[in-house]
Length: 182
Image (tube, rainbow, N blue to C red; front, side, top):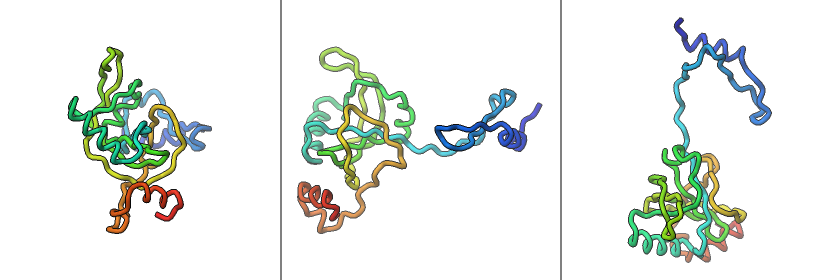
């Protein structure tokens, strides 16, 4: 028996169920169509968001990463838990750094590997691109560990850097952001 996408689309209309989680009808393929795949849509990358503990500014984070990246290349950030959605993150995801309750910068994640800490305990190493990209700041409540961040919820890269705002010290830029003046 040959299955065409037209046959499947007819059955998708018939075999639907209501999902209270999505609040919409979702398609369900009957078992006889197992193995039939619709053309895949381009997937958006999944990001991580993490507090930069001990950093008071983006320059502090840059200095810390330069020091630790030179001591043990490639540049990595160790964390306790391995992300279950690691493949989605590897497909172009970034880590967004929160400094003083503001999402400040993003950094591309090149790979996610299992590692070992200095004390011998297992960990997860996020292999990072050394380039830190400032993003448009957004306030965030404190949290522990890291969280997933969908691409649609990620703040855009800072595009409104003019010659005036580029010359401002970061602390003043943060205060202006807090007052919603930037």
